[in-house]
Length: 566
Image (cartoon, rainbow, N blue to C red):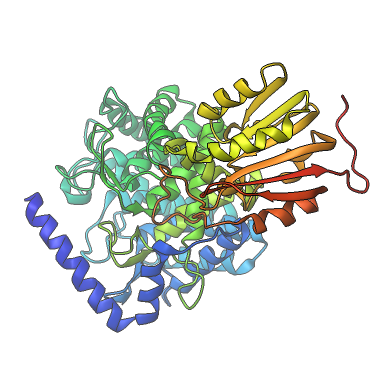
């Protein structure tokens, strides 16, 4: 069966590409080109454009179109995601001070009020069937509208929806009847969490009990390595990152509402496994994994990535370490760079990258923007600059795929050392732990104080030095080097030695094809003006063997600048 599904998927990818090219050629070019789109984007821009795209998707009935497809165009309104888009757009309106987003969310609430089934459920629009997950996500929107407006009609509708969820819940806490594909799903933890929220708002214990019952069932299906059974849309197929992170969102929300430590521990156990992949194997998580955390699909599920960034920010806020902030920073840096930048679809992002990928192929889905906006709203609090994002991205790539041919710079190192022979304190700032360079420098400066600083770890000289050697910094970080801070420990009259390569990517370092930032070729002419602006004079370019080059100079204090104390 998997072989047949694969053939069908490839056929759909080809057919969709041909249809999209003829029906929407401009959007097709933009969507296909996203994979090669370079350059980061400011968070404020991404937040505003991403939210504006959702306004573009709002249909005349007040609901949000499920997607824009390059095959079928604009879709019908989708109750489920309209429901959980409401809290997002209300927050965006408040954050940006723009009433248009608030009014859009209120219109969406009116749409939902008019389509609820008599038994309290909400339907999936294509089939007309009542759905558990859809109903649960709509409760989030109804409760937020009640909180904002005080209108009891929203609370009444949420109560009726919650009552129906309890009526169709299985004795073990799962949902099978009216679930997607008629089977239990652990990502329905988001339904368990919203029942707990409903119980908190109404004060009715039955909703809290229903939520607890579901969360306990979810936790009972966690494997020893942290992965969860029943985490996919269809049993027997590997889950997408989207549903894997849904589980985490539900558990963390339930913990926030109840303080239940088991829910937090279960979430952290799964998150830690994903974190290890993100830090040491994949700078961006894969679209699909199996139960052993093996990557089965290296496409980008942009919705899942946005959710993962949001979860990482939550775990960082809960005190689980700076690595989660780095993960969120790198993931959001990537996603912001992939928003469409022009035309009617500006602010949208393909469901998969490449756009023909298996998750939502040839589509822009509204929930992808929802989770990106949620993460960006949290991310804005940290005020992380675009320069810091670029630096974080490059540092992590270098840690995952370190250079294997740094020795190509050694001929230039030998020449550069002569410049530092008269100094007593030598500082060397490089990329990585030093390796062959450190061994070489120690042999050359046996009777002098020598310190190696790994720029990847944020290390820089903090005490005055007579000679400062920079190895490979410009070729990796030319767009984001804090040169003023790097050169400050160098004494007046001290020597600066820059040893680098003419090509930006050393052998062994692998930037993904869709990387927002891919280093380009640099030349000494690119470096000299930067050094001059920092008070370095008497610059000289020394002949050496390609691809290495060597620049030396002397630091002259600029106006108003003071050296570090000895």
